[in-house]
Length: 161
Image (cartoon, rainbow, N blue to C red; front, side):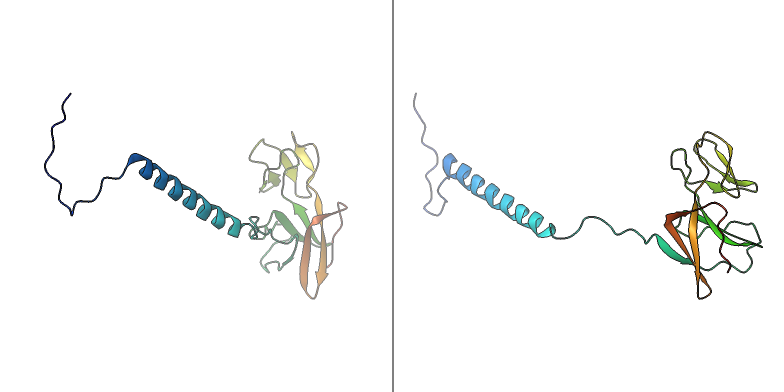
């Protein structure tokens, strides 16, 4: 087999890169880029990836227009706060069946997920919820109410405000 000579090469034309040199350079650049990405990953490690959750205790100012026995659900909370002639109390609005957030109705609360119904005091009026909605601890401090979502209270416990 005879190889035909190509056009004459100019001395300004670059040398063709051998395949082994190209593969060696590709391996070096791959290693360097992997080390750079690893360094960025290590720099992110000291920062917490968990967002802080809101405090279980929070202050509530009941609206003046709130009628006795009407629920007030503070924005961003899963608690219904009530005021009546005996005092103020709070009930969790997390369904005891599977943890859905119940919605206030004229008779009390209704779970939109599975149809459980609760009276205004949290008692189950229609299943499948196994237990009543838990009452939460409420305390009064300087004209403001403090509700503790993390502490259950005995049903019927009310605070004067």
